[in-house]
Length: 323
Image 1 (spheres, rainbow, N blue to C red):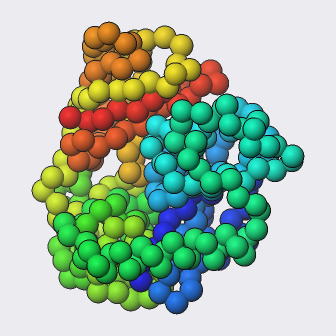
Image 2 (cartoon, one colour; image 1 turned 180 degrees about the vertical axis):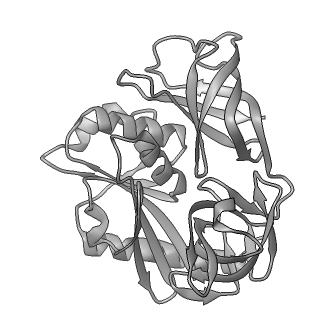
Image 3 (cartoon, helix red, strand yellow; image 1 turned 90 degrees about the horizontal axis):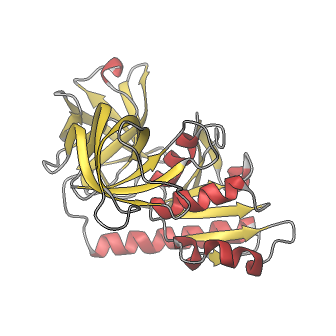
């Protein structure tokens, strides 16, 4: 079984015709299953009010469906978010007589330039995405996913008779039933009692799989969204990080030290203060040092999306590659 996760950036409940509704919070999941192929659709339920909602949906996605009803500020913000998160595989559904020619100059030079413009055909879209999920399964079988597993947590709760359950998507590598994982950024560990993928029990889960994990040796109050379950020693956590940034072309001025930004990575959206900004040449490509309110969990070389929520229409600042 292989899963494809698709962010649906569209009017509310658009994905209800694509899959069966699952867990709902500031992001809502819809699930589609046919044979061994599964597709998970994610909607940013609280967007545009909460920018974090859009970031989480985009962060989880292997592919994107962007429905364009009108060319407005939200459309522009979605383009910037997808560019900064480097989501290069997706589809555009144009409505209200918007033509590809109208969109083309607005997405030129961005990852969306490569998105396929498709008709609004829900049945055809479901079949198309299930077909991609099947190909992923064949690819994974041919290249057994190597590496230690990483699972960012997006929800957790107690289930009577089962204990602590977390929901998340495997960011990379493989996890196994009965494996003991670190719970970062804490010092705790937890053992996987069982793995479920789309309500089916499984022995393992690999990169891209949407999982429910029943855990032993941990309490629900020890967990939080954004925590990471892993056995990979490369995963670090720190309250101070540095890296090279790339600001969006619309950002009006150099970033000032002391600014409060929000760093988005995996299922984390953390307030951070800009401690230091070093510009050599282009001010849109500074080297930044950020101090977090709480630990950021990451792998060196990871891409972080930077946001600015203190008023103004432009809320997506750029991206940063962590050293």
